[in-house]
Image 1 (tube, rainbow, N blue to C red):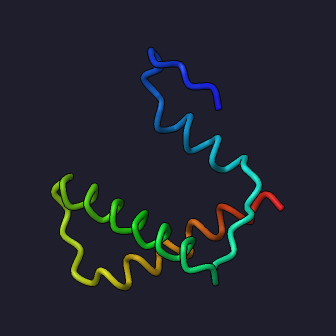
Image 2 (cartoon, rainbow, N blue to C red; image 1 turned 45 degrees about the horizontal axis):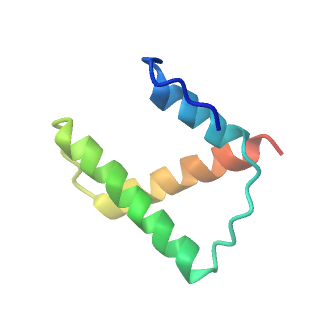
Length: 76
């Protein structure tokens, strides 16, 4: 992974690299499930700190998971 520290667009660069990675996740693996839950919770915190209110966190996480799943497998 090549990251240019001076790049103002690091988030987009990292996201694009993530999209281009092969997906070897086994969603039944407890470690993977834990990491995914932690990732979703981190996104919830970012949204909350941005000043947005999420009334149904479970529904939001499900929508987020669906979006990430579709993005991950769209390239296959």
